[in-house]
Length: 507
Image (cartoon, rainbow, N blue to C red):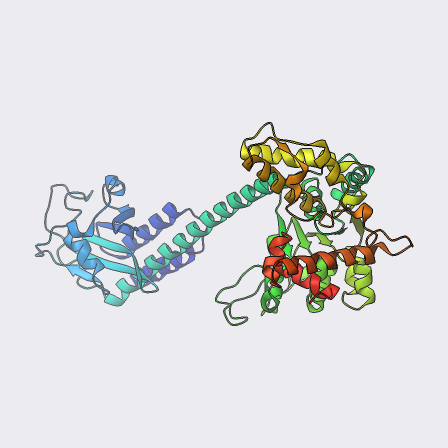
């Protein structure tokens, strides 16, 4: 008995880590129990979310039992087992009805009297199932020590736990795959198009095609609103990694206290509030692409850690001493002159050169020859579809006014201006966007404004920064000095506006 018991226990313990499917593991457990205990029948139940006991494996019972669900209130013996933390024995003289009476395969005639034994199965204090044994021999279980029964009950509970965890992980994995594919499809459908016929846009498209199918790092530069994120999406969509996710990271919005964790992940207990381990953005992007938007805002301490990932393809979660290897294509974007940031000590030179393998500059709208009419047509088509106004058009004088502006906010500013003008026209019951509907922001006639068109040679960067400074000051004046309202006025993120203002000396 002892030799056979030890072998069965070992086999069941080894089975906990086997690759058998759940049904096979359940049956393997029941078969082992029948080798040790003097029973004519046995059954393993799982407690479902509705409070029913569902048989998942039986031995010596009609297979029809597997198609049933047992409500404990209707079966007093099962209810008694569930209410006890210790094994429960039912003698031959017990008057509680047996749920399996008449279902034992070894019964030649229907017998209502036999011995029964049952154990409740717990995992970390939670009831997960029940194990029952039946014998036609009176007193069959009297000589069995409780510790032996409890040992098998613990193994049965462990089996249920392992199978449940594996099922949950598989379900989570399938769900994550589904979510990932959905996000990929949504990103592709929302990424928009590079609209324009100008030589500058043609060159931009050529640059994207040239580098897209490589794994080179790409640094996208350009002013706010030029479409740097759109370029990043096109680079990823045309790459060999297009079937993998592109993970977006806004470096300017990373909370300073947990920025490292957001990028590289952390282990449980690494810091206050780290109640579980978590993968960072780079791990999520493994095999795909990571897009580091507003890279110039990344703190110097994180720049050093980012450099290690780029150079060696390895990272460390916060609080861990293990190194993880990742295969990630990096696309970065910034509206800053990183070469100037390097000179002034705000950006690491080695990181800059690592990322600047293939630079792509997105041209500002004022430098795109003849693209405003094309963009206006494309943007208005979005408004027509959204508001179901198929005959909405823009008046030639209004279009000429748009072409005369410098658009410091670029395509984004043009889109917002057109959307506001279209809404005003629709509200007025018109299908023609006229010049007066463009009054949502004060469009500056730059061609006749000597402050912005100097007679003598001056650096363009300084002129643009001066115009940005005047715009921010104007927005603050309109907003009673409130930065959040000024950001709404200029239709941009409050944090970005505040940083830009402080950089330009606006208080």
